[in-house]
Image (cartoon, rainbow, N blue to C red; front, side):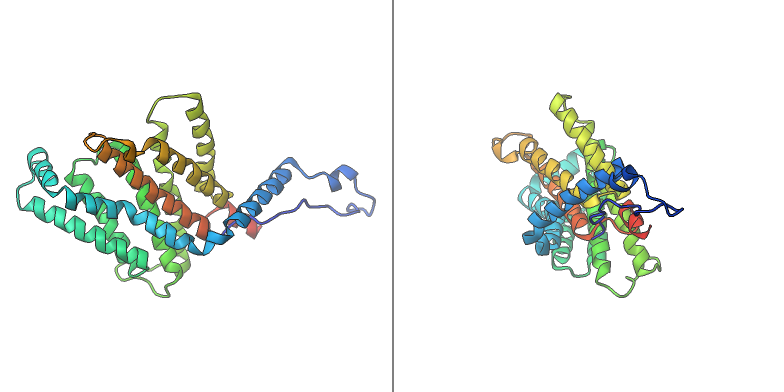
Length: 303
């Protein structure tokens, strides 16, 4: 994992360039930036120590959470098949027959591709299939201009890009039909794209809901963590912070289990709940793999 490891306070030596004694404050007092690095490194070491028991399971947990929204959506279509048909036909004006084919293809694609991603089989094709589902559903249900839907699904695609990058770590050849890039380059660029896309859910959160003091504090912390994830600075620590913020937000805001069965908002809350879980899964893969070579953390290792 790409992360900065314990850069202890440096010392300039006991002599200056002319052989004389160095100033005490230059040798013993670390700069403010160095002091911050020392403290953040200690926090990372502490996070590593408490996360050691679950580290071997992070990739599997992350992959499962990423596809859980697709599995839930497939189950929703099956259990509400007639309602879905009526909506597509009467409100979206899609002819009968095509509505049946549209729903069946979505269920099959989401189920098969999700299982393949969990099993780490043909991940490239499974990711392409799920991205295709996201696009076709946006068009079919008329949600392509819904800003919250758009931002959430960008984040979900960011998680899928992390799956793609993770799968290429284990492969020695380029998948058919994709541009011929070096294995290292493909992993690097898709990790960067995944990092950037993952934070779009938080952008949607900023512009939704009422403004309160608590919400402003959460937004400020989350914004800093998002910036750190995008530039790849202390990315593991920042991703863990976002996981905690999103998990708490999900439990208290998208608590669909507390709504009555006939409440019209229950399905929307459930849909949002599982989408946030998928984005948490992408962040867990980021914690496991690190931010990749296009990141501040990696550049610091070079210099």
